[in-house]
Length: 136
Image 1: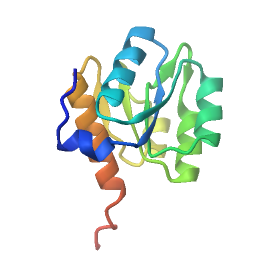
Image 2 (image 1 turned 180 degrees about the vertical axis):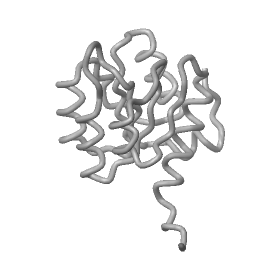
Image 3 (image 1 turned 90 degrees about the horizontal axis):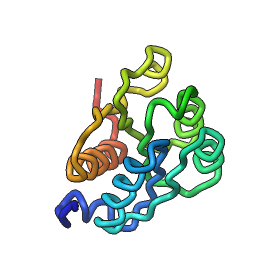
Image 4 (image 1 turned 30 degrees about the vertical axis):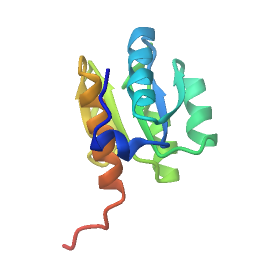
């Protein structure tokens, strides 16, 4: 159970898209976000459901598995990038090079991780997405 920390307060009310095809992991992610007051969109277990949500839902953030069955979430990345929605990966797999290039340095959290790690990463991604670009 994630505790209500500073990270949790940052996520309170945030709409978080969860894209994960393993039911127990999806439920754990959902619980982690609900415990800190976030609103969960999904979990989406199929690429088709993830694409609909990424295109149509109001989102603050997304957490993506790299693969859903035999398909990658690359098309979801494209939609999130078009909409300016920050995301990170939670996966037991290595990010393919083509997805890495599209991900603009997105964080990859290796499975398994604690709920606190997931919530902390989500808060960090939200903070980073709201920072002004650093000067060159």
